Length: 253
Image 1: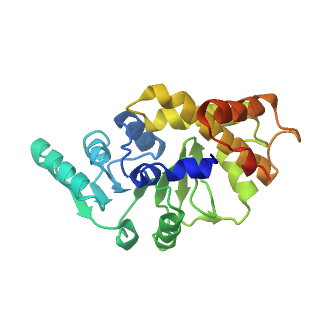
Image 2: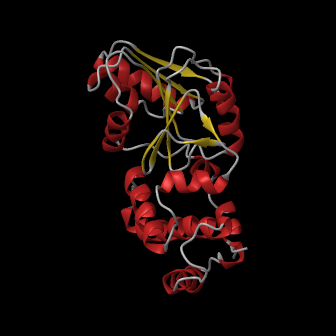
Image 3: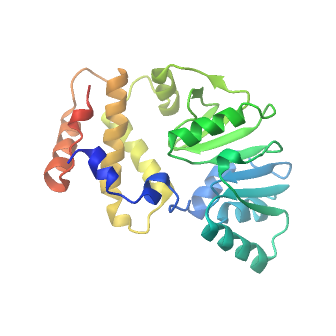
């Protein structure tokens, strides 16, 4: 089956990231990457079980930590954690992030796969005060060049450095002049490690999918290294087709 058909068989909660919780060590890395500190009001849009809020307050001593999530289950888990550990200056809001207000934010963590949600949020981000740091994972904000990158963590700062050049954006994220198989594989491994898994035995499969996605996008945008398809790419395309029944070669333009 084509990879689009395979993805359509997965639960929507997996595709949207709703059921994926960012591991605590990754949250700590993100907080350090964002230079989170005591003068900051920290927002996590899609805050899940609230672990990021706890770490931001207890370990990085932020002024305020505010989580916004539309899952009643996650809101309940977060409130329980706040009550049990008696953590001050944490607020949790049950709301669609597209309708939320966060004008007092200094740092925002935002990890969404849905392009419509991201585009809606970018409109809100553009109205924030200067100097707000917005961190995404894996992909940059639509139409923006990053201020700082430590892949898979990407930081944009208001006012945004905007661009409609996808090539320029991709190369800025990967911090290279062209993208080869080794770069694609390395960055795919970084991403897979950062998000963590309950079943790490599937990590290699995920790395293959992500590495091929990175390289194919680079090839289609004209920023892959070389004109020919590397043997390593052909091999992994064949592995997906023969062992998993997933076809990706049609994505090459």
